[in-house]
Image (cartoon, rainbow, N blue to C red):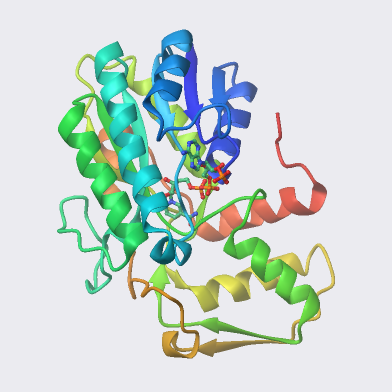
Length: 298
Ligand SMILES: NC(=O)c1ccc[n+]([C@@H]2O[C@H](COP(=O)([O-])OP(=O)(O)OC[C@H]3O[C@@H](n4cnc5c(N)ncnc54)[C@H](OP(=O)(O)O)[C@@H]3O)[C@@H](O)[C@H]2O)c1
């Protein structure tokens, strides 16, 4: 079985490629510059030559603040890219798994967001991702859109690695304590995607559509940072003594974030048998990999 992983140098793409290899699944793994999803000829040539059983689009423009000043780039990668992939997949009769985000919601709800809740992105990143979702839905029936949140891994830029850097340098770190969400290990998401892929080839009529997947449990960025430091101290000495909770207003960013972006993950469990793990367990595992350099690289 060959699957195509596009965006293979990113957090999710990296984990998915490594996990596939460890399970004997062949992954045709590509990223820029070999394949550019905003270029139809580039994406078509790749998928035509590989003819995978499924395409996973893990490529994205993920710089939430940068998207405000690079709107064209954000819409090209997050909306036009999935549109191009969906058209090619429709022509070649290949299902597409496309990854999206909690930032399609505005965070005004007080209970976990369900897949059917109305979307209302607060910034360009969210708007571009939401437009990408709509394009995929309208072009290709055989699609899964998996929304995730607060993604981290041993690779690339993410909150966990930023906190580890700050914790080594500073005695006090100030972290926003009034935004709520669910940290998600990219390795867990990769595992869920592989499980779904295995499942949908055994199903007569797969339940295509939109699903949520995150780590289990809710915290704030402040709670997340405190847990990172507490667990990291089992591996390395840290300089940080105080993690000061601050309101969003104390840490101005070019774009507003949702105050509450917890995703209800019951549908992916019901339809695909995918259960989520407490986010702390997954964090512990990722920190262990970071500090033992067991990053699972292929
Ligand atoms: N990170 C989060 O906290 C988070 C939260 C919720 C949802 N998500 C979603 O989860 C998915 C995976 O995120 P991630 O954190 O793994 O992303 P990531 O680490 O930023 O990786 C994205 C990858 O896509 C590549 N890429 C960008 N433009 C491309 C193009 N035109 N053609 C081909 N590849 C391209 C990037 O290359 P360059 O680095 O060279 O640009 C990068 O290697 C994305 O859909 C994202 O929107 C992420």
